[in-house]
Amino acid sequence: MRNALMPVLAAAVASTAVMLVPDHTSEAQAQYTMAFGTTAPDGTPWSDQLVDLKKRIEKDSGGRIAVKMFLGSSLGSEVEMVEELAGGRGRIQAGGFSTAAVGQALDLPILELPELPFLFNTTAEADAILDDVLYAPVDAALKTKGVVLYTWAENGWRSFATKGETGVRTPADLAAYKMRSQESDVHLNMYEALGVQAVKKPVAEVLPALKTGIVSGFDNTPLFSLAAGWINAASHYTLSKHIYQPAAIVYGKSFYDGLPEDLQTLVMANRKQEAGRGRTGVRALEAQLLSAISESGVEVIELNKEERGAFRKACRKEVHAKFLAQHPALQDEYGAVKTKLQTMRGK
Image 1 (cartoon, rainbow, N blue to C red):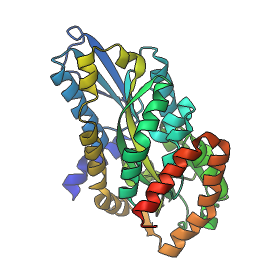
Image 2 (tube, helix red, strand yellow):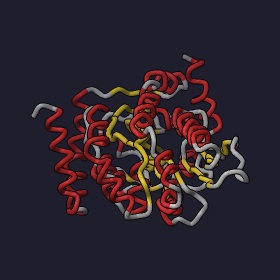
Image 3 (cartoon, rainbow, N blue to C red):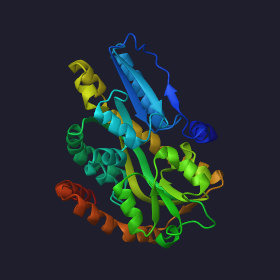
Image 4 (spheres, rainbow, N blue to C red):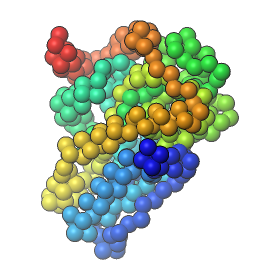
């Protein structure tokens, strides 16, 4: 197990240090250069997949496209990178980002819809909604903002990490902590419904905020919590699994439109295979990651059905209703999601 986790643990020690993956394709020889930005730390399934994507694009294009991979928030926060990519200003042509960050940066709430708390019961439900219900409308919405959706990626199930004498088993327990929130209205609304004080912080600012006491907790997945080093500043990790968070690999539309047709086809190839690989790579590590968190001295708290249900009852209805009230134009998309879920659940 320890050998399997070495890349992740090494990334946790390194935190989110700047990482530039060397190019094997000379920019001088290439006709097009794709700078790819992401917050994904090195040594994780995310970075492994992205580096392989870089290699495929460079190889299959015969060197016509050179891909420069910038990991670990080295080009800025997620929101900043998405805004720059969509603006076509030249520094970033592609990236891998959480859906909430893309939605917030581009004012596209449809990207925040899949992150509504307690929307999904299983990963199978999440996969079906993303692939069968949301891919087409999300891609269409992104194109109006200057972005092209390539494929889905995976962050996973977010849970609460806190730093204190006692862990979290109830919403009242969580209310004792000042939590970091992702830069997303859905995430902030969830904390508000739970009665928790939350502070928006981009990824690069979270670890310093935890160390200085500006915040005393956060929510994220086991993999990101370890790889970013955040878990080192926590004492407890409560498996609330309150939000399933997808990610998206996207291209700037101005860059994509500037490619000849054969290269457009090339960069969009293997979409479903890449989505499957991203999901499998992250999910296969979960048990080992939770063991690593526990072995690091952080208490992992498993909620029973009633305890997790209390979090669901405290925030699900209110946050979903607020989302629809704020974004009535998404009633049809939300309805399609609910219909698909009811069918899958046999209701």
